[in-house]
Image (tube, rainbow, N blue to C red; front, side, top):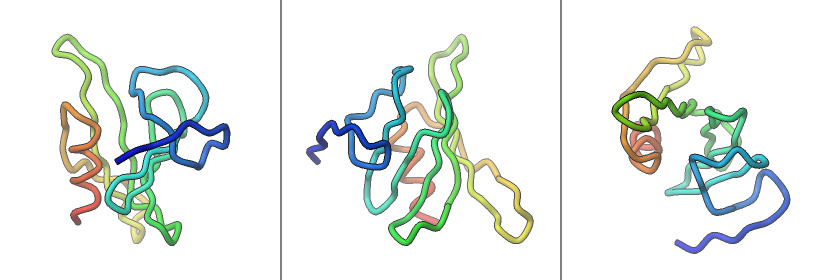
Length: 96
């Protein structure tokens, strides 16, 4: 997959989970991530529906990415799992 850097926050850009720069988006297997804040990304599908969030957490073991699925009927997020790679967290959200 080849991604290009653009200035608009909702287009494809290289993903750097450690970057504190401007909003970036990432596209993978039909799932779009858009940075909401420094350690949080909103995961949506092509029609704009929100599937959930991916949150970055740094601790003594390293950087983890937590996949959280939105339950629209209760307007709550449910943690699906913690992953070492953001791609794995994206795959987890998209597979449900």
